[in-house]
Image 1 (tube, rainbow, N blue to C red):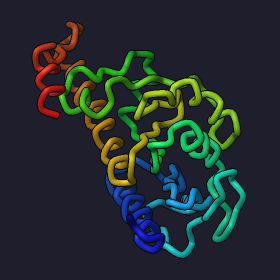
Image 2 (image 1 turned 90 degrees about the vertical axis):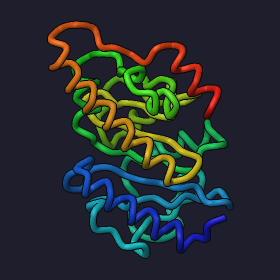
Image 3 (image 1 turned 135 degrees about the horizontal axis):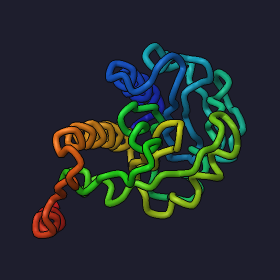
Image 4 (image 1 turned 30 degrees about the vertical axis):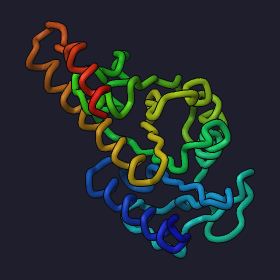
Length: 210
């Protein structure tokens, strides 16, 4: 079990990775981790994810009350909604990956089936309807998709990924954007032809071997 100091450092580390990979710009995005006592550490409002300090993070109760630190991100409501509905999820990453977000804006179903690792990571990736960023409605539009999805695209906004821990949630964001970039390249190469998905037999092998 990780102590709070380690979790704080990890949030800053993975926030910096998001920034380095261009999945957030300016003050975009937010990260949270649920601690064993039920409280939540999250990124503060108005701070670049590339330059956060562990002591400056926000600590909240399970109900969203600020316990310590800077003012919390305005989108913490969707994080708390995840923790309320999914007891096995302890980390949420929200970013604005360009290719994945663009795929949703284009109105096409997210092509999870083109890469085996995406099938293993997600199964499916729903698209939540548009809600103005920073408002309580963001939590409302993601709620219907939180039953089983480990990644949700937010129309005209970004994406969120969930994990049992922060590492898993972050790497799911990486995989999500990798699939979207691969799909965009495939669309250009296919010149209008349908994208080739992993054969069903291959998907069964993923299930068999984990």
